Image 1 (cartoon, protein in one colour):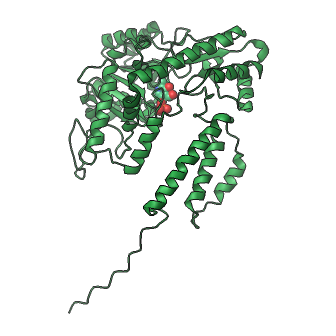
Image 2 (tube, helix red, strand yellow; image 1 turned 180 degrees about the horizontal axis):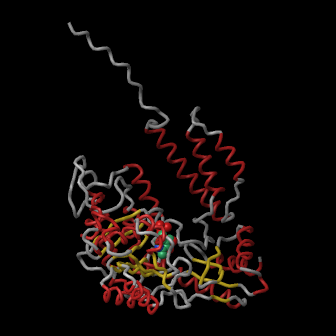
Length: 475
Ligand SMILES: Cc1ncc(COP(=O)(O)O)c(C=O)c1O
């Protein structure tokens, strides 16, 4: 006689700390919404820079050994306080910083919605609506950038991933055996070209892709931060003569240091002449497609095989939300196609896991969808034009006080050099950061240190600009 099966042990209820009852969730959520609004008010009125003592914080952290659970409301207060005092505030209206924005409200709403549903965007079977929505936004953006109806692309974690994807598409198109054999398929070292002012993700990408950092040819600029087409042509000719295999030209449309735009049409001509993939890294500057008034500065973008435009830069979504746009949508599936029997859908041209580097992925596209749907291209145009106009005001204010602006960007970033009496750029920046009144940074532009000032917060006011100028010139 077979023994009766043992009674299963009683299954415990789900842990309440992880899955509180709904009324409790709602109460905490309401509290969080209210407290976050208050914290952001304090941020705007306080210093832009962190004030937290990191040593004290590390000691506090060490006490979290996760053996004794703590009540969530207290942990939320603690977390908000850590962020309020422990980071540089992108949400501060005097953050004149790197290209990361104060996020738009629609984008933040998207994050809440997505966090609640947590759809799996790897597959069109699991998230048909999310996948269709992202594809729609990508097509709209790509077509606005001048790409044809056959275009495609996808959301990425950011500009670095989008750039990496471009390089893989270029390599895959450059040699039919690259997919199977990697870099050794080429008869010589595959090499690509971008300017010495490019974003340094390109150097890492060369390493990651296995073609080696030396494959990134950092071409000379014209003295004004733009890739010099003659230097580019000469570099290609020298590589061909030496048995290397050029496969890609990358132009920057909005360099990270100084917002300069490479000669996009001349780079396109060279790519065409040498049959190279042409990528435009418009991670920040690409948002100018929203503005009828300013988008002319991007002429030539429409000739690219692919482009990077980050929603989490000048489109002001939360991070990470980049975009890879590609003229011929099949190029990305050529790179990322894969067979996986456990996946519930296998549609080559549709399924994100077969068209992009990521697999399980957050539904980030809703952020840009809601921003564009709520504000339209026109609303984003105002956001961009406002920043460009404010940049001109800062320029005028500094020049009137004897400063030099050494870049000539049509975008919203200045490379500023103080008069000698004020001291080195680095010293001036240190003083401004110590005061906490604004955030600016030091960058290298054409072999010299400059103060990099980028208008990136959508609500920076005339009073904020006056305080910035005062902080820079009097500190
Ligand atoms: C021109 C350019 N490309 C690429 C990137 C990398 O983007 P991310 O930081 O989103 O990876 C940046 C970042 O500032 C950039 O300015």
